[in-house]
Length: 452
Image (cartoon, rainbow, N blue to C red; front, top):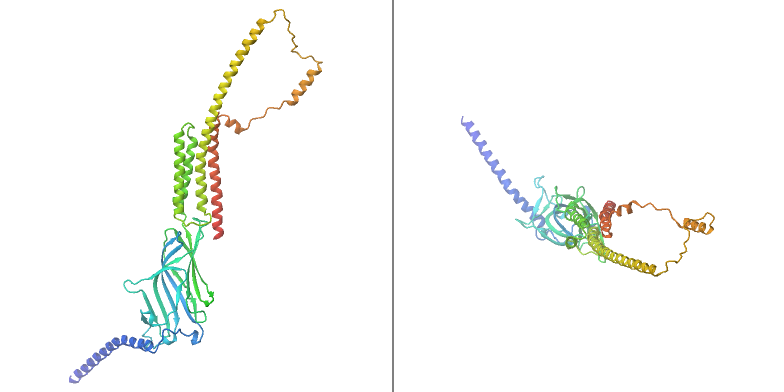
């Protein structure tokens, strides 16, 4: 029994010692990381000013692979021609000076938050207008150093980038906004940027923009040559399609309604001058205000946009309806003056005839009652050659009666010229506007498909 108790006591003591050693090993594991960092980044051991070697330790250029994750796109501004984007930017390269022992796979990587401790590529965004880092709650940046010397740099940044736009098809347009990244000081002899293999650009799911849709994106290279050398450059082209439904509701349908309202003037009585003038002036001013509001939200460009064609033609139709009333009013007053003049002429002719009949009667009373009058026969004799010649001339000059056209027959139902102008306008204006819509939409939609 004594021997058994002694054996269990030794076993218990051995277990405690093993647990204590294991705990000490866990505690000392972080100390091992500190020793590794001091070993590879200690004073006099690593110089962050010197770039890494090329592939396989050669003297070639250092290769940096880049990939980005687009977190959000907040706005695309047509006036300033810029867009804002928030992204996670990552770079990865190999620096053989940073190799370390991974302690049999237990030390996967080392993490740093100070970028100035290691060499960093001098990449910059060439079309950047504004940019800032994110420091809440801590700076959103880290550096991971792997046992084979591979370095991963990741940072979250927000950028406002220039995006030159072509607005000839606005608002039926597509815009390409680029994100350009290049080396500032290292030429291609020392530093080369490459896209990461596989999936270099990632976009957050359910990316929503108020007036645009991100159709696709393309990665490419854009190396530039200057008088100081050739510099490596990467770019991402983001293809945005403008959402047309917003402009259909806010611009196109209201303009159509204003044009149609201006046609109500054709159905009003030509004597309702205040009503027709008020309607024409109101629609014209409303259309002008709509046009100025549209142009205020766009940059002043030197070419004609699709929206300019639409608003210009709509404004012309509204102005034409107002001019039509001026023509109707002029024709009405002109017809009234002609009618008055005709009445005066008829009265004058009637007075002249009455005066002539009185004079003839007085002359007959003054003549001799025995006077004889020479009367020519009213009946044509068959053998009279002079009568036959006159009859032949009359038959030659007589024209067969023309059948009146349907348009003239229909217009004859409206006695005055002013009324005929109104009736013709009721048909002409809608037909011409429908023809314009057919040409406009077929032209710009066809051009949009060509650009696509």
